[in-house]
Image 1 (cartoon, helix red, strand yellow):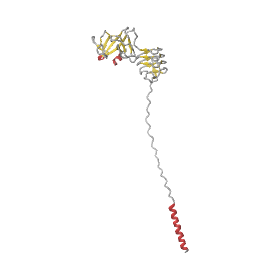
Image 2 (cartoon, rainbow, N blue to C red; image 1 turned 135 degrees about the horizontal axis):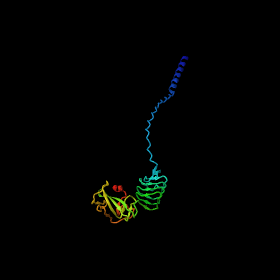
Image 3 (cartoon, helix red, strand yellow; image 1 turned 180 degrees about the vertical axis):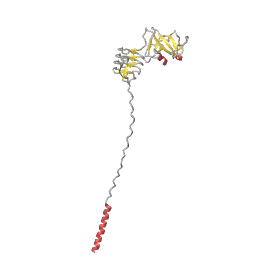
Image 4 (cartoon, helix red, strand yellow; image 1 turned 180 degrees about the horizontal axis):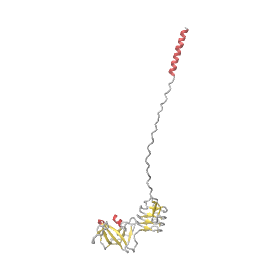
Length: 253
């Protein structure tokens, strides 16, 4: 009997051992470590040279002075000049050292305003107008570069067939320049010469014909008159004999 009990005890112990083995929790596997390989750095971009800055000085006729391009129009303005941003300064115009420009001023193409000048508010400066050192223009004044009454002026006019007429504006003839361009007109003019676009003089007896009405004739030595004359410079194209002070403007017209 003693032997049987011992065997039973062994059997019971064996079962408990088996059960204990089954209830032991399995340890999770450690996560595998991934090795990160750093990418090589991107090649450096080739160095780009910075654009050459535009000169910060400009010669207005008395030597270079500090200047800049005006934000409205791009014309040259001396740093000491006072020009409102609302005033347009054409790219081919310039405003000199110490100049003061009033609000509402109109500045035409190729206008040159000298140093220490004063332009009143709402003044109108026609194309090619030039104001010397310490000049002054009153408010709301209209200024052009056409020679005043009492002096003979020379003008150039393009006719049909690219003929260029050289005109004399007599001293007593009314004349003006439009405020918005370089176009001029007078109440009459005398034809001095007729030339080709290349500057060659046309033979005697040649007649030039107006591009405007296709019938007004231009003959060397004769006076040409319009039907009437409009003396308002604010109107660019109106009654009168039209011409330009500079030949190249007539050629390009």
